[in-house]
Amino acid sequence: MEINENKRAPYWKQIIFILTAGWIVIWIYRTVLTPIYPIISDYFGGATDAQLGNISSFYFLGYVSMQIPSGLLVDRFGKKKIMIPGFLLFGAGTLFVASASSLSLVFIGSVLAGLGCGTYYGVAYSLTTEYVPAEKKSLATAIVNSGTAVGSGLGLVSSSFLVGEGVLPWQYLLLATVVLIVVMLVVFAKFIRPERKEVKKEATPAVTKEKSKGAIKDLFKLPMIAAYVLYFSTLYTYYLIDTWLPNFLETERGFQGTAIGLASSLVFFTAIPGALFFSRIADKIPNKKTTIIIILEILAAGMLFFTITTSNQMLLVFGIMAYGFFGKLAVEPIIISWLGQFAPKKSIATTYGVFNFFGMSASVIVPSVTGFISDATGTKVYAFYLAIGIILAGTLVFYLINKFSQQKEANAVVNNSN
Image 1 (tube, one colour):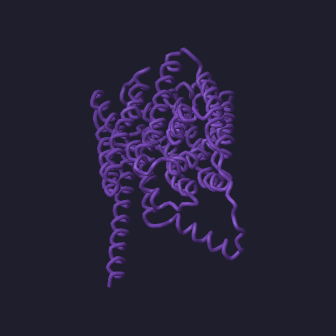
Image 2: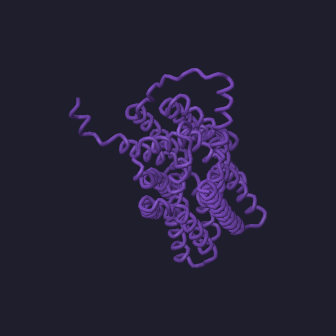
Image 3: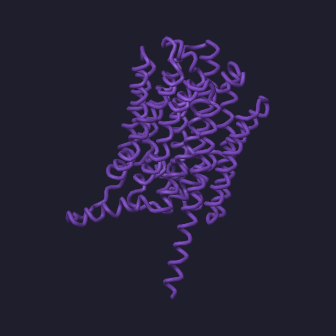
């Protein structure tokens, strides 16, 4: 038995593999319907763009509403005890959507799936924060995040080919996702270690109240507020692409059939080398993480602008690839590892829950807002312009708050030395 244990990879490496696989399954579900919105619309009797956008918005409403509660639950009861019930609910919601006979039922199933997936983020990044060696955190987070890219690509390509070309009904892909969810539940049960029970001393009500106030204050330090704002703006752009890029390519840029899924998936596949490359740099020069984050955000905004303003399909595909390389999946691991240095040690999952709550609130807004803009103007280009403005504004806020915080720390050092 000891020999087998010695032959196993270190636990932190097992965690990276498991969490990556979990994100793959989650993102297959998130993207599998987006390339076939016209087919979904026909199936339910001619849904508008705003109604189709609501499928994602309701999912993300459930997801976002679970971020802070799930973080608190993870810190209180342990990661494994929250992760497994969460994935069970995710599976139930997916099954509900697959069997839905009306859009209203699709919305209900989407909320359930979102609630279940909403438990995953805090578990995933509290596990990496706790077990991954400090010098490998950004790279490890990038590897875990690559699961989102792989899952997105698989969801987009399989959907656009199998459903878009009439090979399978759209419900079958959701049923296949349910099977993958069951597989992941077995993996979680077998490989994720339960929390060690710690003996805690009883605290007086006054002390408990004081600790609670301190904990809330710790979650809203200036650098953390900067991260929340930046993450919102980053995810606003990303989820616009995630939910509406396939439809934009089909209805406004002339892409057809499997080409829609292939072109859209390039955002996610080119993100993997970008994430690994920039995370490795960030780990080597940790004192420059803020600068790297700002540069990547500006480059991503520029590439998105280039993508939507060109009418040449080859240049558009190049712009999609460039956004993927510099965009959300490249910068997110660096933001997460940068945030980790400010997170209170006893409430790491709560910290990441709050962080993801602010970021993912963008995902609730953007699908429906984009659908509304499209219905009102006849084009989605203005929605992309809005997203570019939001990402630039968020980056500016991040820069200014960090500059102010650094200046404040420098003044404090000078005052103490005097």
